Image 1 (cartoon, rainbow, N blue to C red):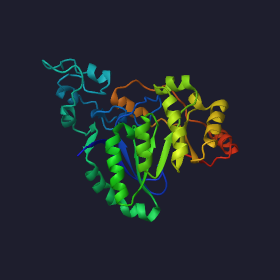
Image 2: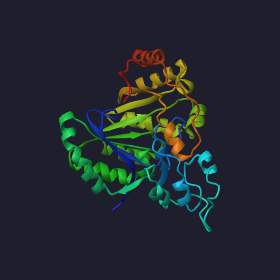
Image 3: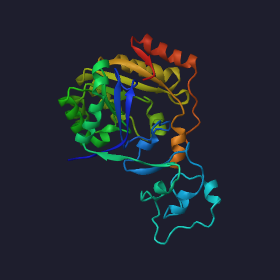
Image 4: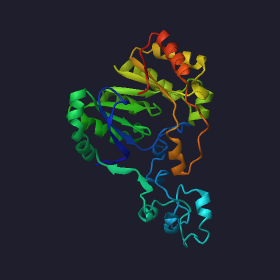
Length: 310
């Protein structure tokens, strides 16, 4: 049976659809948004991440790593252990051997990504059924981009349907149309992420064109009964009134859009980037309360139901 690669199963979530939900985060994403809150989900393969809050800079991982260069360890720490050298024949890149994880005395390293079959995932999700039933909640598949693991996602959705569990899929929409159609037919609610309409800025900040995203959004609006549009609110990226007004006009023209969720930027993903040894994101600032309220008014004046957060 096909297995999925999952980074986290987050229980008691109240921000990923109606009611109390369990959110399943899948690995892999075709975008690379500069502000990504879950950068550990972008890589489609398992990998090691340093947990910044636990790391005591003891160098145990450095000594254990065959490459002499464990992922995410600050260069200042490496400089304190000049006698550590790579072992003969060590791979040029991390081979996910987990030696650094086993050597860490404070659980400061973790393997990101575990395989689960749809049946094993269903068994985990059924533990939360009481919360779903009492709150009219359910299961949300997020990521990363869940459609990157399309066959696993479809199998998991089918099993949830058999159990009568409400399902939502949180997608950026950058996926083949045929797969979007199959997933849309299998889920109850689509949470659709819309970052930017401006094509040049989208390519700059998200690493890919938004053409396919917009085409799939228009298709969904004609063929799926329930769509929630989710828009990250980042003043330096999409906070100007012209861009927001254009997105509001688009949303208002799509009858399937039940509501718009404006998601104020926060820097929660920054510490994860440190642990992944990736380049730090630009110094974005969270929107102020007046900026949030101004954005809300733009969408409400277009006749849309607006929620802040979620």
